[in-house]
Length: 322
Image 1 (cartoon, one colour):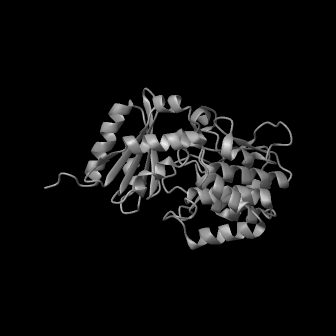
Image 2: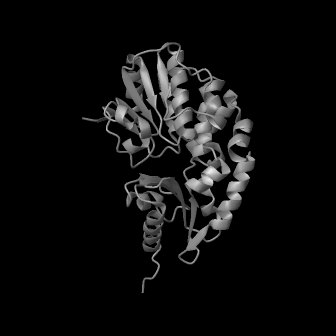
Image 3: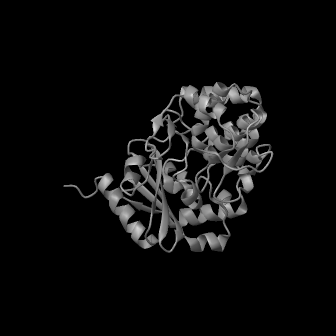
């Protein structure tokens, strides 16, 4: 039976635990990784064994988050904590191993349905990184530059460098504190919000050439097929943040990105400007998230997924009503 707990209770639990695996979600973003590695560092500073578990090796722009967070030695897992994981399917290849072993879930998604012995979910936080900052304070651990870099990455990437509607005064106060500690904000902002690989430039050219519009321009849809990923030799770094492209266009209320993962699986990301609920939209397909940003996975080929998504978009945007 799951128990909802306070941040102080979470700290109390972690103080009493050791040999901890920290779960992150598949297709990892800055929030799940930044939160995971910040917590791992804090636990390490407390003399505990902790290891961040990812679906695959972390490379590219996020690799710096691992510095100093590696466990001091091999250990057998005794407790499992998930961070920024809203639903079991987001565990990806780790789902079979860990789905029924999660002792503590820490998240900020209102749609969280993880089954864990203890849960702390605060949907008012813009990022799980905000929660981890409060938790580390509750643990009594000094936040150094390494932890600050992890948390700033978590918070800044989940708020679009503080441009998204989920940004609150608390978000900015948390970021200001991390700046005062000395986090590498300038380098992090450049890396995640300005720097582009040549392959990213080619990808954006493809996106703008193939973007489709529906509902009198209120809905914009982009497609990332396996073919284009192979042709351009794209990495996760090259594709980071592309979900935000459709919603930037004037008149678009519903921006949709469909990523083909295989012949029978697509990942769908939805971004809105707030007047349409991205979470409700994705909820129709078993997914969820936040009002302005959500996602889902659909076990169909990309042609069928396109039909399903566009049909739902037309319904949501009231196209064709007399």
